[in-house]
Image 1 (spheres, one colour):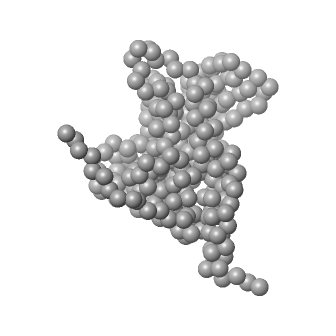
Image 2 (cartoon, rainbow, N blue to C red):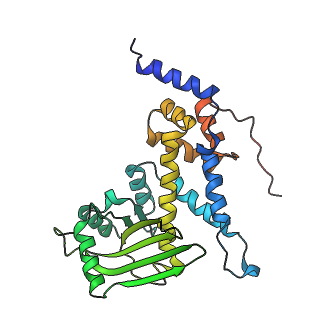
Image 3 (cartoon, one colour):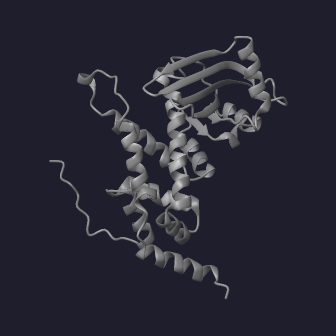
Length: 277
């Protein structure tokens, strides 16, 4: 027996109404893991001047990347509505190509784009050659059990076809005590200035973007509630628009509540207008 798309959708939605979600793979569970990590970061600010905790600040920035524009069309609408708003575009390695970068430059947009050695062999060869000529800047920071290594160089050709398109390159390794390492690399139009932005702001934004992407992909693969909502709505663009709308207008206590509201529907009991006097 072959089920129609409508029947399959009905089964998925019905299953979503009775499901017990895997808490550690749900949005709420993943967000708690993210926050617990943020709470372990040492806040070096002057305590008397701190109004918002570092964990809350980072969660707000994380939410900014999580509640992303649902599509390029939505982003274009934002640009039309706010033509003078300064923006930083953060994207993965699929976007690190000359036509896209030239378009960003044309629209006066800053960018931080991921790059991979397999897709950008010429770029990495140029960086390695510069390293051998001692033209790169290298920084190593030893932490408690983890070593952070940075390498950057400005104004290097993007690829063999577009050597005149100059970008700034930054590379990062995180090496644990047992020798395991993680490696990330980006290109940007930001020059080295106080560590890729004042107090490493640009790199922090890039890492937050990647963290939001990881949480999003984990939900899509492993969260049955997310999958049920997507099946009901039928379109990722509209789903993200609906999530953002509820997030901005109603006081939900968790992302799970937003997902269940989208899956089952909801109603608002009356309207109370607060008296400013």
